Length: 214
Image 1 (tube, rainbow, N blue to C red):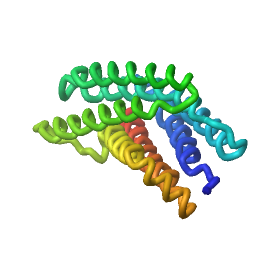
Image 2: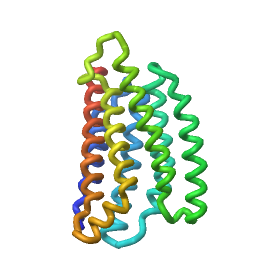
Image 3: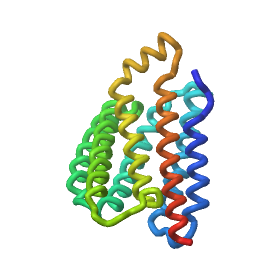
Image 4: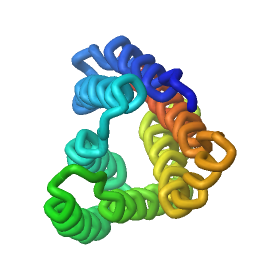
């Protein structure tokens, strides 16, 4: 088993990046990324310590985090995608399904186990909205340099992360058997890579936003 906190360190770097690039008052709602990243880093390091150092069950911790994560990501998607299409038509049904399954799973497990079905529902919703954003973005006639366009990098990071994590959740049993038989933590490695992609994209977005304000 790997004990080095790859994902957590990447999140900490992204946190530092968010405070460096998004402290300017001109960034507007983008400043909320700082507090979301701070919350994420504290939670992830706590979860890592509980599981790998003290060998405690940390599912309940991530179950508490799940609605915070999905609400924040939904707000980001609404803000970015609203100019392109009626994103609320996808967000409202998706969030309704997520909420119903989240409370069902959480109450059934007494909030001690991670609500995996709820996570998958929210992930599929996010993937669909990201795809609609890319489609609508490409249809726009105006020229946009995506290399310098902050929202594009936010959506790109979300798409790759949630697409990969959903695939991991679907094949969880198979990946767990590899870990058990061959002692290769494939799922841990994949999530470390997905976090690297997500937060690299987000840091690129923060940099682009910073350059727009100076």
